[in-house]
Length: 344
Image 1 (cartoon, one colour):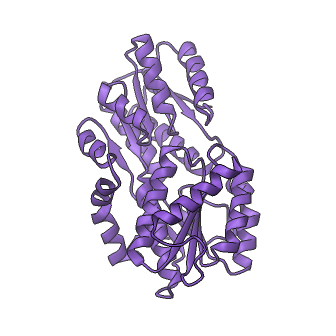
Image 2 (tube, helix red, strand yellow):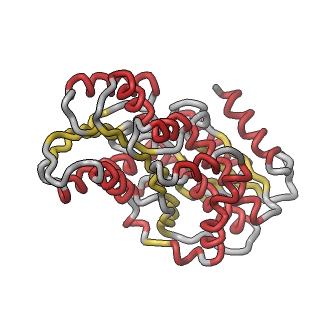
């Protein structure tokens, strides 16, 4: 596992066209959770795009291939030695990471939280990510469009990471929207559906068996949609499915009609914003802002699926798809900043 994480970092630095050990250039880094997952690959690609837009900065991206919060912390601490010009962190364990982030900041290594919020105890003052409560509401809206206005019954809600702020916020958004718009529908959960693919599938299998008459099954994580779509196909079921992410399996499920919608957190954009800000700061052009930089998500349905599938085909297509949003941020980054306390 250690070798896999190290190789990832070195390969990605080479991919930037810069030497991994260059002392002539400022050096920034990015620690991501679960490097083997599609969302981590999206963030990594975006990060290098953002750094490359500034130029003259080398970059290392590293992280464990699987779910391993302790390894994330270890890799972060190692990276603070090489990437002293700034590090972005997308961790699966914010509380576990907090002391090490605080230590880095005390040694004047800038740190940015990406995707899921770092805890206040870390003393990090910049977060880049979605309004996850709003993303949960968007997913609920898509499900409710397929239900009659007087619908009654249950919706089963799963959460792959209970206790992790952004995922809890997504769940709250789903629950709140149904309570607001369809009072006859009872949302059950959120139930812990686990982060590991196999455990996630087993968790949903049990929930489906226990709730055969549910109107819909909804998950907050990137593996929930794929698991539910597979179970729906297996059982020839009619209940609705909603989830998050642009994992290839999830997009295929939308295409096949097994999922109503998936909400993309647009991790490429998060990574690009983080990379650009760190590189700009590392070259002495501007200080890092403080606050929450809210990056928008994207609702993916059959209406825009082809365009999303096209962008996922290559790095060039991704770069072209996100160019306008990144340009908009670069032109006026201050307009994207909100108070850190409002992040959810």
